[in-house]
Length: 343
Image (tube, rainbow, N blue to C red):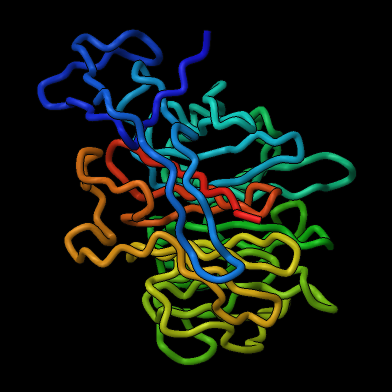
């Protein structure tokens, strides 16, 4: 029998608890509140979304699972959520039930992206914990590891490199954002050979203050990079040669990651909000907007203080394939939420 208890409704007692290693039962009891989460909705106009109680619940014998990573979804309906724990990447089925973990040897993958290449789905991860870009099969088998590009001339020490995002373009080229390092974006060929760099710290149109997330934008006539310039609170378009194109959205709440579904864009904003852009990059909805300054962009908000439709620190995001979104909060004990689109 599969139990789908809402992790959001759980009152988890972690103080003084000793957790056994890798899948073993916890030494102490984990207490769960009896009141189930009720459905509710958020958004506006034609863009309303309903909460999905219990989706993404993490089994109690897996706790704690700090979430500081990304979210990606494959064609079969499985959702991949990277964590800072020894479990690596958690895999949930289309109903949001935890099924397995992969890539346990690659703790602290900061972002995820799935792309189809030669008929096979490929999982890309920016491995912040190991300072590499990773190209993997969906079972976590590593196909390619990309280290700090010392040949770029941007680094005097490889420890200056702290990759936070990765994606590949239709031509096979790979882009990695050094968001927690020197704020450069680097381009590699399909074999991992270094090609070029652009950006660097600053507030100019061709600079970044923490290029935290990136994704290849295929909505237009030609592929572009959509980059989350987090501390400049904007999204920027660059071409695949690293040339600045345009500011797509401004005055955001510290954008961390983006995801595409058709012509729509979903943005995870660290300061307690998800924003939806239409095909013209116009803001059409804000989801789960948290007005509590003490909860926004805070890692330690306990489960007892969560509200069903209020995010605390959205960090990873993916569309669900049916107009809904899956959001990972940056949280010490782990939080993953699914919002269904109301038709």
